[in-house]
Length: 524
Image 1 (cartoon, rainbow, N blue to C red):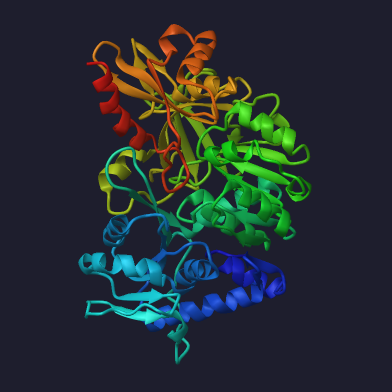
Image 2 (tube, rainbow, N blue to C red; image 1 turned 180 degrees about the vertical axis):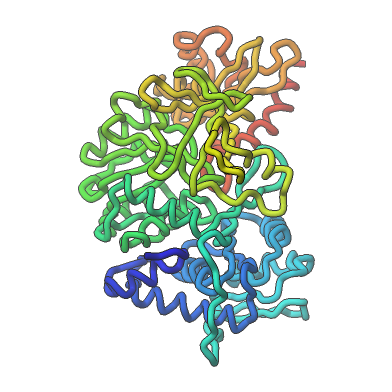
């Protein structure tokens, strides 16, 4: 059975070579030809001199070459670094420098904007253009190559790798400072694919629609989960939410993964024929509002919803099976297969049922830490609490920084990120709880609750919302009916569009920065 990431495709190419592996627009590729493309590019990377464990940056939208590049890096024994195609040149250059990328694979249009920023990327050896157009007007320290011209005149032996070696580095936005590179092993990614495929009941008959960025672990898992079972993946970079539903209809999609802002947009649309093929949908990256979930259930009565929780540092931690959705709509479920999730106090002792504590995840999904950041790694990767097993080696777990609670039946409930928790008038207020209540009014399309510095309260609750027609005053009136005084917003701001980060989540950091000064000026 596969031990390294690219072996998923290698295995299926021998067992079911004609199964469709990838679709993009009106083209498709079976597993046999996908494997050939991966081996060909992997051999070309070895010909270029890539060493074991060296980093290969991939800065592309969703297309066949993007997938080739990920798995070719794995084949060669290198490490792939997916870079979100929405990032700007300065952000891309930071990632390239931070993890010492040796080869960058990108497209002509992106390289045209980026190449001046590559001067300071001293480890960069080669830049590969998949469009076969890009040329440099002056000499740089790296070679510029066209993908179609790459070949290897001889057969190279890939560098020997084992499952505990690094497969990928995924950059995730932190609450402060620059992005952090989360280091994932082959074992992390293979275990994750097997675990998710198990509880989603994925088979080779599935066709998953990949709408999330591959630089996001949740988006990348659409590839790994599908390839583990020999299913197919349809690649989509959508412009409008309606494009997602059209793709489901056209390609007869059976599985769709999304984040709350996307589900908020999709919930009110007419699903039409799409409802006939969609077997399941999944949510992660934040709690799905109950009002949104209800709309989706009404529109998709034969589709199973899976509510999930995960963090890049451990890929995926919990899921709520569809059978429990109506009984526990606020729950994030229990641990996924082959993982253990604990709720602990600050001293590491286990919390009692209903007692808030920090979520700690142990098992083979725990990543290898943060790239080149020992301080951050030590902060979040610490010994497993209260485990007495006689071992002299210390087992490391991920301490998530998320506050959750567990009920008597072992089901978990998200309360808040430590960084997001609002402290006002001596109370600790979960922004998620405030948001859920406002969503339930039916007045808003999207909402974010923030804690903004206040001289008397410590923090004041400020709510940012988009709405089809309601005013801030109408939302505030509705809040008074459902929120206690200490949870009432001090200010509600209605705007046209709530900003998102590159993974499609609400960009709370940007909102807080913008409205911190705005709110202070209003109260002077």
